[in-house]
Image (cartoon, rainbow, N blue to C red):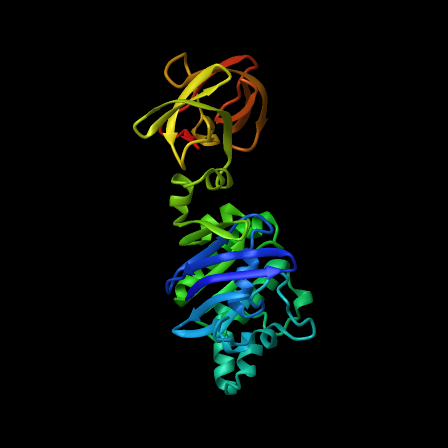
Length: 348
């Protein structure tokens, strides 16, 4: 699937500003970003539920949308599976009939419908639930019915818009595993929208990070987490400490950041700062406690501590900045030394 130069304008607002993306067969791709960044609009444009003002969309060798050529296939002709946040199940239809709907719409023979529905119900763990109504199911089970309905006729591409947002935390963790496993087992291409970075990293082969209607970085979950190309990408992914200061020296691929009279060496990223101003970013899990002073070690005062199950999370004060670090054991109030590994401190 190929998306080229897609622009969407709603009223006076540009929602998508020239999106180009290629989705390889068999990939599970996450569109990740804050609310309002345009990720759902892009998914709806691919589905045929939104009409871009400019650009082209190609699915499986077919052009399904071309603004210049006035080509715009309706959703039912794009051969896509759709799963929405609301599930959109028919309350008066049984689980079996909800799942069978798309197959019957395509006038499949009864034997083929029965076989396909039972296969996909087994795949999502709904054996024996065929005669139940949606009101008799839990939220997680309803979500499985919605996914099963989208997969029953084996579409080559499945589009999922915040499919797990209605589930509680425990169910979301379980759903990540079986959704990815099922999509991979069926050999489908999947594109799903989420604002949850953990969900994106757990399910996706690739993450496309969006901001302000543009694609800002595209790569594997590991690449986005360990090699952010911008301050936005670094700050969005993970849980971070940030330090505002100015660059006073550059050496090779490193820069020295001065913060409140203190200095730290880190890796230059994304065109480090403007007019000397810069932001240092270090993941919470990378900030360490040190036994004493040394290079890239700074004194800090412990402000508060929280036990979060299996570890303690501490907040320190350093040159007017609140910094967080974790340890396995509790810490007594007082002064500490924080170590900033220079290869883990990114300076933008």
